Length: 217
Image (cartoon, rainbow, N blue to C red; front, side, top):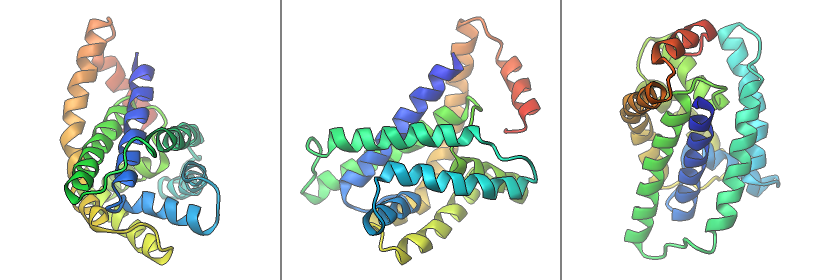
C-alpha cells in the first residue's frame, strides 16, 4: 500500500512543478536550475532532474558518510519522466496570460508540490536526492524542515541566477513558503497514511520501526 502512496506522491509533486513552470512567474530554485541547464546545454528538464540527482546522491553520501542511496536515482528517474509528461500534456492546456491567472496557477503549483513531496516522503522509500538532502541538513543542524528547505533553496537560487534560469517573484515565494508548505503537509499526510495502513490491516508502528532501521527518518 505504501508504494501506491509513493507513486501517487511523485505524480502529485511533478504536477505541481509543471504548474509553477507554466505560470511563468518563476519556479523553485532547483527547477529554475534544471530549466537553465535545459535551455543552455540541451536535453529535457526531466533529463536534468536525473543527472543532478546522481550528483546529489554523491553529496548526500559524503555528508552521511555512508554508501550512496542508489534507489534515490530511481525516484529521480520516475520524477523526471513525470515532469516531462505533465509539461507535454499541459503546455497547450494551461497558458495563463493575465496576472491573476498566473498567480492562481503558481499558487496551485506551490500547494500541490508541498502536498506531493510530503506524501511520498511519508513512505520512506527512496527519497528524491534533493529531498533527502533536506532531511540530512535538518538532522545535522537539529532544526526543522522549514529551515533546511529554505537553506537549500537559497543555494540553488544562486546557481540558477548564474545559469539564467527562470527566476522571478515565484522563485522568491518558493524560497519563503516552500519549506513552510512541506512542514504543514507532513503531519497531515502522516495521519492519512496511518489511517490507510490501519484500514488495510498494517500497523503504523511497524512502519515507523522500519523507518528507524533504515535510518531515513
